[in-house]
Length: 125
Image 1: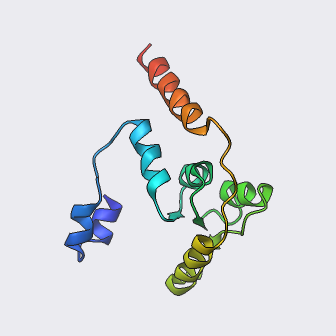
Image 2: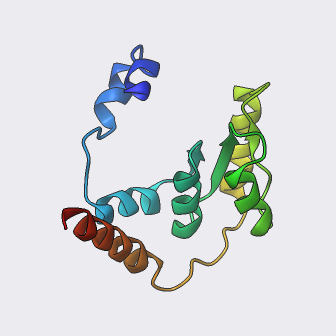
């Protein structure tokens, strides 16, 4: 709903983005086919990295999980939400797209979807 309000002035964009919930396989496929990801949530950053997609993270936690993840993987530090600049974000996206991505570990897609299936099955019990 946040993005629907944010992009309300861009109806073409709103109609191009699928807003309904989809299966874990479809979610991961979306990440794999993206040219780049701007991630503000931890799991978005994780999925972008796992999919081998260029990503720029925005950290609203002032050095929390996203910053720790990127640091541990020796990836560029996230942008801070305080003092956020759209120009800087766009610059970082272009740099990320032009930087070679790390090799994605074999089986990451299957591991992701299997973990979600397990969580869903456990929640039904």
